[in-house]
Length: 454
Image (cartoon, rainbow, N blue to C red; front, side):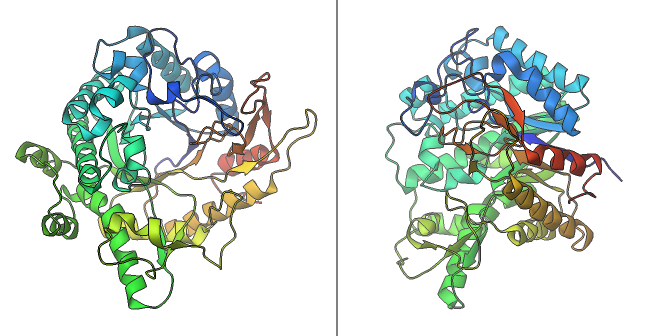
């Protein structure tokens, strides 16, 4: 039996801090100010100076993989300038410390933190010059680390670039038109970057790479055929379109047909399509937190599938939800694992899973987070059913932010960790790390390779 990976995932801006040190240039996150309910992004959890303690916790838990993100702005001045050796040296030390602890590093090259200059001057991934700059940066990181890092992804949750509620912000389009033409251009430019770097990694190294989605599990609201059809369309445009490219080197024929029929202006050169056609994936990875229900009631025929959830998302009456209205659905997790493997026959790798909850430490007593234990237990059980009953090839299970980090919106109150970090949105306090009840539970799960779930 091959090694099963248990581990943790983070992003640079939610974890590192060190926002203006050792030659790092600004990203779009570095200029965002905090307010009463959000932190700024300057310090995060200060892993830039103190990552050793967190790696020690990971080692004690028995983790054997850590997926982290390289900061483009830390390594390349303004995204397209000179390479910054001091930035590389930080990641040199981080990777060396991981390997010393027998923790496999997994690199993500981009997690929404566009270099500020490229956002201001070019509107980020809307522009092909930014795609070229990203490829240059990605190749440099591969050249530096592929002999030590054997698992790679390019873009965190790549299908978010196909959804208008997220695409323009995470692509760094500060002043674009933010219309459907720009949406599809971003989707293609990002895929071209992924394909180029995937092909480069395969040509120059023995490391493995795969595409990643924020898998959007959407159920039809009723047995109305229109609900079912629109839910299928959503899946095709948001999930399967990219998975087809990752696995088979081409976009969905349905999506290409829609682009042509609706005169969507997206530039796809023959060279770019050829690069995509050469692409292969060693695995398919995804994040999974919750599922959604889609009703056709308010969706008219002029609305593109990419916009369906903006008009038709409704609550699932059969599921519990978090205080952030994310509905908890472990069976949906099994369904995603199974249908990805059934359709593409590539190993699947869930590399983000977790529950965000508001928590406070009283300074003395252990946080009793039984709700987190239940969430992870039920999702791990669902994964185990996918493996043992549905015969799915699953590489591992990585939780999200298992040492508390800023949320994706910069809210320190939304905590995912099994280790509490003693800071809040306005007060950095002492950033003390304090294991929660779930820490000890997760340790027995990992050390038993998933056998001890109680």
